[in-house]
Every structure is written in C-alpha cells, then in structure tokens.
Image 1 (cartoon, one colour):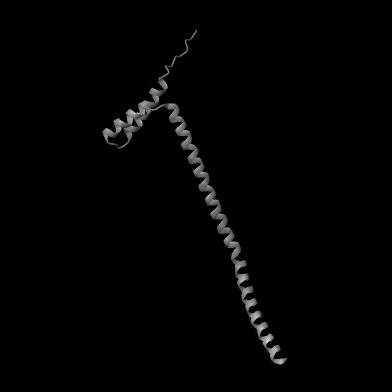
Image 2 (cartoon, rainbow, N blue to C red):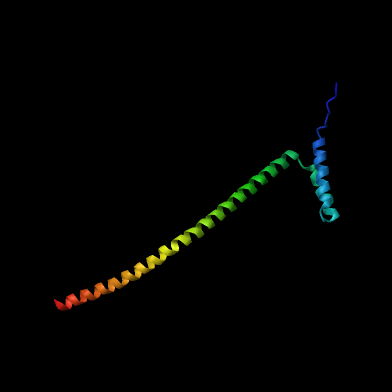
Length: 116
C-alpha cells in the first residue's frame, strides 16, 4: 500500500513566497527595496491576497465592460450622426422655405390692407 504524500500546511505559502521572490529578483529594483518586498511577501496572508486578487480581477472586468460600453455608444453615436445628416439637411431646407412663405404671406397681408 502506497503512503499518501503529506504536504505541510505552510508548504503552499512557502512555494508562493519562493515564486514571489523569484519574480522580484527578475525586476530591475534596488536591493533594499527588493529585501523589503520579499519581507512583505513572507508576511502576506494568502487568503487576503486571494481576496484582493479576485477583487482586482473583478474591477478590471468591470472596467473592461465600461470601456466596451463606451465604445459601443461612440459607434452608435457616429451611426446616428451619419443617418441624421440628410434629415438635418432636409430640415434646414424646410425652415428656409417656411421663412420665405412667411415673408410672402406678410407681403400679401399688407397688400390686402392697402386694397381695403
């Protein structure tokens, strides 16, 4: 019968700390700062770190959704502007016709008053 491999409780944290130190060593950082970061890494509670990481991922996900929504709104705005351009042009023409007809109407009213 094979014995089950027993992993000490602190093994996961030790592995995480070693991995974190390995990453820190690759960074172009001052040695004093590196030692401080490594010391902080050893003191980190992995559960809290997990919560922070998940929270950060959620925030980034929401930020990505917000950016996508903003891009969608911008695309919709551009499309509406494109579609409204001919309508706005027609509206301007109708407003000019209306002003001209109002002037003609006013002239005809003046002529009617003179004629009466």
